[in-house]
Length: 92
Image (tube, rainbow, N blue to C red; front, side, top):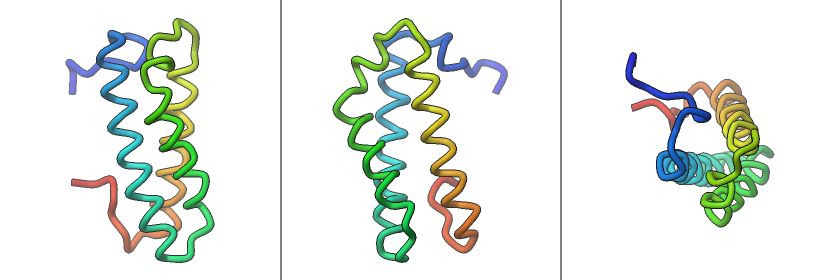
């Protein structure tokens, strides 16, 4: 873990890859949440779609845009996992 970078230390290509992985994870979680009648599915799906369509622009932004969307994704995924401990989406 010592060689892991923070999002603001990554290259544009690395940020893009991270955002795409988050998009896929959010999408999967949203599908599970929807089937479980968990109301959080819509927010996760919306952010997933946004990351998928805007990942390159977000990654290229020199401001805090990438940090903000990563924090939001982590918040949504964390809340979903905490409210559904019997479902494991983000663990390997």
